[in-house]
Length: 147
Length: 141
Image (cartoon, rainbow over all chains, first blue to last red; front, side):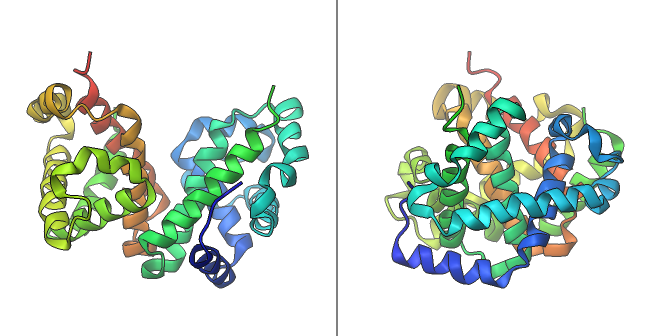
């Protein structure tokens, strides 16, 4: 469960409404694959990931980014029960996808950086703190069913 | 371990913030303390609620050290040796905190520079700062 003040919840809802969520997803995933290239190990079928330009323009990266951010957006509506909300996704990432949970933390940080990039000075330290709490909560929820 | 291209990107990033060390450093510390309150334990000398003057003063010092590292990417160990001694013997900042500082640094750059701060620059800067952190904690044991 993520503990956010009323002010933090309002800030999150307001600023999330200002960004194009689909774009955020594609950019965050793209940045993850460029900044931490070993994360490409999960995406052998994605085609050309040979350069930053290739990654950021790759349609499969964008499509997958959108899928990921849709799940994240859903999480924003259920901040009181992230573990429940992400329960089956957690099982999937453990049992079928075999993704190291450290990747959820890295991707969460990239989502924050992309938000900073889009929102500029609106992304104040307090807003960053609120979003970092959320991405940490989502990462923990996704790791929760690992065994 | 930074390629020539990566070094060029690191220098590009530095050129965009050089001259603004106090301001960037202050915001970096403010974000660090706001987002990761446990990091404040290493800055007791700034008081429980550091003001802008204190943040700028300490921020300036930290960014100046980053500037030294940028100039001496060819030999970080030599350039940062005194700082590495300080961290090992006096400050003893737990190594787990350096990624938190690096995250806040990326957020400062992304929010201020926006499109000027490209993916390639972010990747190179991350790799560079991670290298700095390794050098600063290398003498811990």
